[in-house]
Length: 386
View: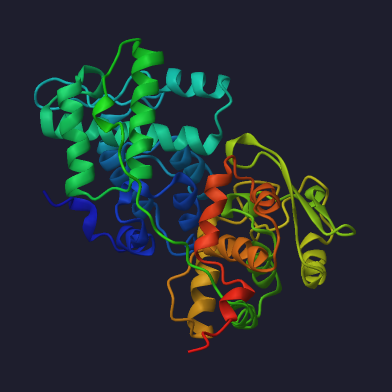
C-alpha cells in the first residue's frame, strides 16, 4: 500500500539523497540528523512531522533523534501528529498491534543492548545487531503473523531463504543476522534456536579494487578543499578504515614520527599505522586550534552540540565520488578500496605480509593474503623470451 506521506517533497528529497542505501530502513539516525542540519532553512515543521512519522511508522526508528531535532529546530511547536501520538507513549515504546493482536515490537531490546554493552561490543556492532533484529522481526510479523520471539528453526529457515535467494544478501550480512538472532535467543530469551542449516555457507570471493599511483594522484589533484584532500589522502597513506578516519583525534596523530595511533579499531583493538610526510601541511591545517581530544576532521557549526562532531561517513563517500568524476576514473571506488590500495602497494614494495597485517589490524594473516592475488611485483615485469 502506498504511504500517504510519500507526496511530501522533503521526505522524497531525503530518500533520494540516501537512495544508495537500497532501502529506507538502512538510513541511520546520524544520517537523518545530517539531513536536517543541511536542509534546516528549507524544512518546515510540517515536513519534520511527515519525515518523523514515516520513519517511525515504517521502521520504528529510535525516537530520541527526532526529539533532539525538534528541540533544536522547532522548540515552540505543538505536536499535532496522530501517528506519533497513537503509536508511541511518553517513554518512546511502541504500542501498535497488528490485526491478529500481536505486538510487532520486540520488547526486550533494551535488555539486549545492555548485555552487549556489558560484554564490550562496539557501538557500531550493537546498532547493527539491533537493526538486524528489527528487520527480521518485521519480516516474521508481516509474513507469518508471529514475532521473532516465537520463531522456530523451520520458520527461521524460511526467513534465511528469503534474504539469501530473493533479496540476494551477502554472506557477511547473513552471518550478521545469524549472530544477532543467536545472541538474542541464547542470552535474552534463554532458549535454543537451531540455525545449523547455515553451517558451511560459502563466502563470495571478490578481489579488492586497487588504484594505481597515477590514479591516486589524479584523485587527490581533483580535490581543492584542504580538509577533503587530506582525509582522502590519509585513507590511502595509512590504510585506515572509514570509521577509524572519522573518529581520529588530534592526540592520536604523531607529526614527528609520522605514525597514527588507532584506538578501539575493529574488534576494539588498538594499533599503530603510518602516514606520509606529504600530508603534514594538510593535517596541521585540520588540527589547528584544536585540543588533543578533538576530532581531526570535523563538521561545520552544529546547532545540536556545543563541540564540533566528527564528519559523517557519507561526507567522505561523497567527496571521493565527486573526485572520481572530476579525475575521470572509470572505476567504482569506495573509501575502503583506498585501504586495499595501501596494502597492495606496500606488498609490491616488498613489505612482509606480517607487517602489513599489523598495520591493517587484521586478526588473521589469511585476511591479508588476499592482496597477493592483486599485487604486481617486479617479477611480473619480466617478458617471455618467445
